[in-house]
Amino acid sequence: MTAAKTEDTGPLNLAPSYRAAEAVIKDRAKSFYRAFSRLSEERFNAVAAVYAFCRYADDLVDDTGSLRPQAETEKLLDGLESAVLSLYGSQKKTAAAGNGTCTDREVRNELWWPAFSDTVHRFAIPKDGFLAQIRGQRLDLHFKDIQTGDELIEYCRLVAGSVGLMLAPVLADKAQAAQDGRFLCACENLGIGMQITNILRDVGEDILTRNRLYLPQNMMSRHNLTKHDIKNIADMSLKGNIEVPSNFRALWEQLAMLGNGFYTDCEKYLMYFQSSCRLSVAAASLIYHSIEDEVRKNGYNCFSKRCASSKLTKLKLIIKAKKIIRQTERLQAPKILKDG
Image 1 (spheres, one colour):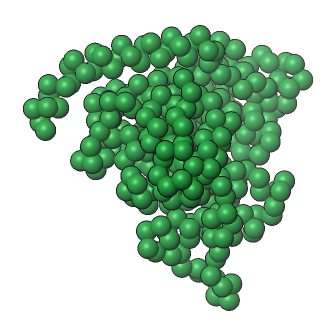
Image 2 (tube, rainbow, N blue to C red):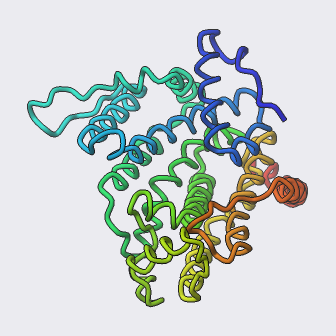
């Protein structure tokens, strides 16, 4: 299905901005694009605008070193935070004296920014998720090895759970639902689960291209693995030796089990999503989670290959998502109506 046209979304001069945001999500997040392009025009455009913000923040940090020094990225993150706060009538206070007020000019010049600003106001999205995302990117900028499972969850909460909080007002059925703590927690948890899947898919890419390892050190120790071991496995995989040792597989499965729990709340709160959004959310959850099965099929090779679900698998999961929604609507709709 083709994404909705942008020309009818808000003032005419916003159309190019929304198109730019759509281009970002289409190019950089194909699974999400496929799932969310089924939304109504207004809601899809909002999802694309929020994604463009998150991608911009993530790319700022990932490009550090190759395109710019760390200090410059710090300033750009300051500018991004200042620009976000300005949407809420606030501004960032700079800690360093003599540096002047941090600028948000660069982010405001991004093609997607007017669409993002429009989306924030149109759906009354609270600032907490955006600020959490920026805090998470600062952790990556000053990366330190993650020591425990709790530290991993907190990191995932900032960089991905925050996305669930951003999108809740866009996807919720009613304003009351978007403010329900249980629903917000379910949205945040789905983001955490997806980020753990992302980490499990990209172990090799993260350590080889960014020297980052998100696998908790205490879990690695219990499986007799070190960062040096993971680097060696990644190096050997690039040379064609993709036999992944059993202790890494066991560690990988332990983390997958940890992530599984964060996916489960999504189904419980499907009725809190606007009816046109339920399939997109359910399908996105199933499709992203299925990446883990692809890693298993490939002998746990998350080092020299980025695993992805096939088009056929995605179609099957969309059908499965429809069945889940029909069942959920039969079971939960009467209760929701009664409670409402």
